[in-house]
Image 1 (tube, rainbow, N blue to C red):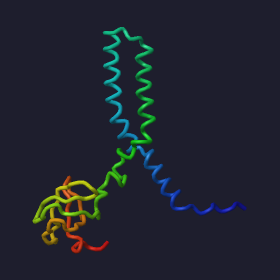
Image 2 (cartoon, helix red, strand yellow):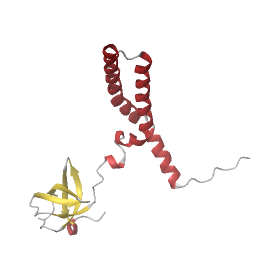
Image 3 (cartoon, rainbow, N blue to C red):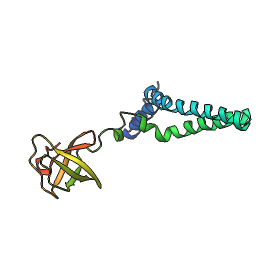
Image 4 (cartoon, rainbow, N blue to C red):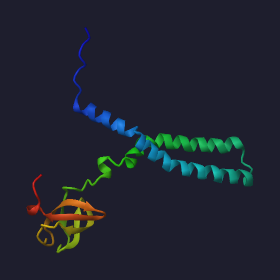
Length: 155
C-alpha cells in the first residue's frame, strides 16, 4: 500500500502557480514575439557591417548567439512584465491611501506612495480639502478615482 502524499503548504502552491505562469505559452509567446524583431535587426546590421568592414562569418554568428543567450538569461528576470495577470501589472494602487495636495472638486492632484497623481472624485464622494486623507477606489488610465478616507467603503 502506498503512502498518501504529504500535505502541501500554501507557499509551495503559490510558487507552483507562479512557475506555471512563467512558462505559459502566452507569456513566452509575447516575450519572444518582442525579441525576434530586435534579433533580426541585429542580423541585418551585422550583415551590412560584414560586407562593409569585412567581419568574419563566425564573428557575426557568435554575436547573434550571444544576443539570443542574453534574451534567454534575462527571461526569468523580466517575464512578469509580459504577464498581464501578474499583480504588479494590474492596478496595485486600488485601496491605497494618500493625501490631497490641492482641493478636489471634482479633480485635482493627490500624493500616493510618494508620487503625485492626477485624481478625480468618485461619483458618490464629497469634495476633498487640501491635505485631507484619500483612498483610491479605482484607476482609469493615469487618473486615480478617489474618495475621502471616511467616505471609502470598508472592504
